[in-house]
Amino acid sequence: MVRLFQYFYALECRLFQGVNAHFEKKYLNLFFKQITKLGGTTFTIISALVLIIFSSSETQLTALSSALALTLSHLPVQLVKKLFPRKRPYLIIEKTNIPSNPLQDHSFPSGHTTAIFSLIVPFVIFLPLLAYILVPLALCVGISRIYLGLHYPSDVLAGMMIGSFFGCLCFYLLSI
Image (cartoon, rainbow, N blue to C red; front, top):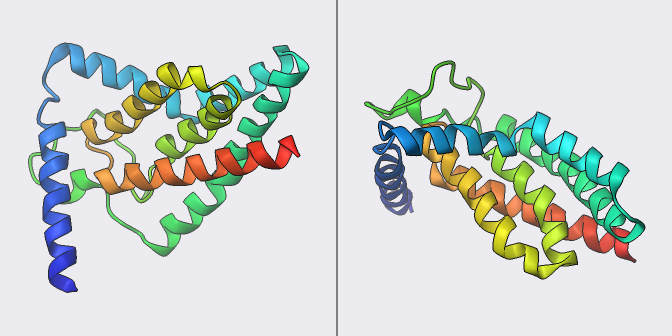
């Protein structure tokens, strides 16, 4: 069992390094440094509030689902970060490229990825055509976390799963 974990960790580190190695590419750097902000606290909370305030009744219920999912999804994120205090990859993997002032808290799971998925999933369920825009956007936020040296791929995958679960749960709970 230990060998299996070591194998997956080595695979994950190679994947991480493959994505992070492109850090010096000027346009990718600009893109990922900006898109990562879409999963940040300020953007996600303001987006949810604006959608709640300025949307029609049917869309407003979806926006409420997103806001509730955003709130509830961060409870397990904070709990898991405490229970499994995984160091960020830039602290462990040599020659990792990082922006100035990187995050210092634990890396598992990715809060930015959780946030963006919890925000978009109710809208994707409500209007499936939005998936063509919102899912690639959310995936770019997740990839940005790896690109910026702040998360392992499994951190991002866990964030996608948590955010999507709470997005679905809240949408269906408020639709009943």
